[in-house]
Image 1 (cartoon, rainbow, N blue to C red):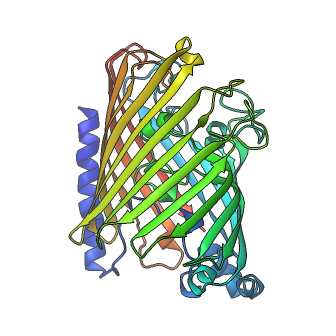
Image 2 (image 1 turned 60 degrees about the vertical axis):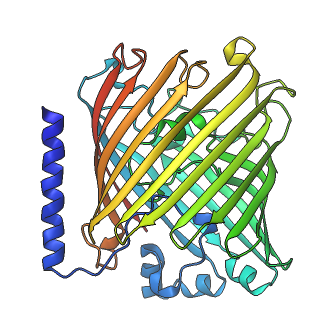
Image 3 (image 1 turned 30 degrees about the horizontal axis):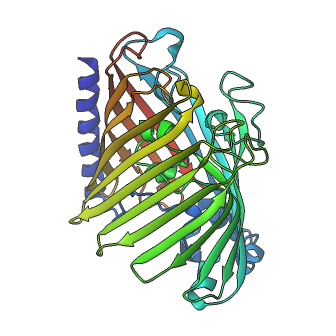
Length: 418
């Protein structure tokens, strides 16, 4: 079959790339992380590891004032193509998020950011103020608008490529105990193994959990405190799921996360989000529990687990009855060589009440395999390019895939960090 032939071709290509990299004695490159380091939590990069944009500005002397102020600028660009073997009507794929349109070359994201981190001040027990502003243009922006920000457009309403202010917040480093960080503004959710930024994911296509189980962003106040070297806590209040300048019910949510480092290779993330999130209803609450476990096995293998359970009382999308949705996904990433990482994902998502996928009594499965290829791991600029071919199989207990129970897709994307 064509799809299995594509898998074999990709495997042969991966071996060939690894052979070339080994012959060229390419320097060791880190495998793509299965648990993304959220950019807003990452320490400022040293000058020797500036992004491509900062490096180029440095060559003409323009980066000096930014570095003196502790400011970093950069971004990424991503493009993709998806093919569905069953050619669905309208060329739309059920259950997908950013890759729902087949046979359509897509500019997914062109993102620019400016930031000043406060991590160094926290480590020294000093007061500091930082920020991050992140603006996206592209096809993905249609699906992540929060209430009150660019939400006059969306999928099927407005152009394919749209703007979105994905993150905009101010950080305060406070000399309290081991260092307290307080964030005010709009930020990506703490829940979920996968993130909006493609450079933080193993695959181009996203899990059902990312698209249907959790929110994308929050707007509010979030505090982060390290209880010890192995235990950290986040807690805050927000305006709700994907809500910014406008609110559909004028209530607040609580968001909290406990991060536990069990040993040098294993970390757990335990998140809860709860509050009234139904339009025009201030009493009926939605609660989400999210669990992530990651572990590194040996030098080349990384494993991850993500589980979600959500419950909503008197759900307006379920005839006023209580509803729930839940699921789990497992990930594996194996570094074949400095230039190639093999990734695999298996997942189950249950939406029996039909409030997320829109069809009641549905259990959905998916399995995805792919490669993350860094063609030029040792080139100062080329190392920022990653190409990700993948093959994915979806199955559902009802014929939600254009009347069928399953669908096969192949996709490829490439992103470049600058």
